[in-house]
Length: 433
Ligand code: DLL
Image (cartoon, rainbow, N blue to C red; front, side):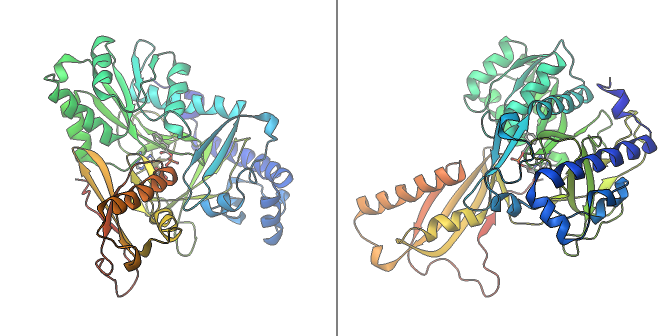
């Protein structure tokens, strides 16, 4: 089944025409409504009229997460606040989060692309579907939720946590589909087994997994332990949220909803556009967004784009798995964490040396993060109570900045290994096999 064959199965020529027309309209819209883009285009000496087809996209400026931070909170919004009906946010590198406002039409497009994903996975109106991404500022929960409702399946908004209760609901409500991070899916499988149940006691058949990198081996393990077919779901808040691309039954790359999100691959050093098939940084232009449209947004995700026919009948370009990032962002339990966020918290506290190490691990299929930090000599103390209070102060600050709990380990001055060259601040022991 295909949700919207008119768009998902367009000929390549029709798609290029549509993308060209939408790009022209978009460029005029941002030029007149977003001073940031008008200035950038004037600096590059381009006017909206210079954009005549989708190929002209290379004339346009890039946008980065830093630009969003510099224009916090609403500087890049094109629509007036009276048109914005929802706001989501994702973590910035330091300080300001990235704020994304959606108009009513943006939300309609989002639930449309999410319905395309779910249909590609084989979800139908007869399914009962549990959305187990976090609800809140994170786009995962509400994004997937409205897609399931739009499709007409029954949505169970389980969100995260409370895993045993969730498993009982999966069993009792005969939940057949689930959306969550792949690591949470593994944790769910483990909890199921601990409760003395097995995949035979539940009727899960489809999983929509994303928000963090995962591998073919993880896919096999999740499928085997939960008894479902596992599909990739990709997206990012700046562009929309989940639903930017999705696997079909052929599972050979993820189809991009190209009539809304125009993809390019660039060399992250030279910023030159690369041909399909070459690995580089993924860049998206939001062709139809009203709230916060973005020109050539650099995702920092590294992957390849694939053209060519897919046996499912969809004609949209596919992207391969994300193989890494061109920045230092970590994804911990689905939440984006930048080492610089931790650094800014530590630098703000007089008790600590600017020497720290993040140790990331996966214990029982759940990501953990430990922040090791050196205490300044004048603050180092034999009084355990004072040391514990110091530890708690740092843990609380980290929690409020990172939105996830980190285990703090106080270290003696001079005990963290100094690096000769570039400071190394992360030890990631999660080996994605
Ligand atoms: O993670 C949106 C989302 C929610 C996608 C639920 C899928 C499912 P952000 O918090 O802005 O948005 O994080 C976006 O997460 O740039 C990638 O680095 C990573 N990411 C998202 N999906 C995948 C995936 C959501 N399927 C960042 N595979 C992106 C690998 C993914 N990485």
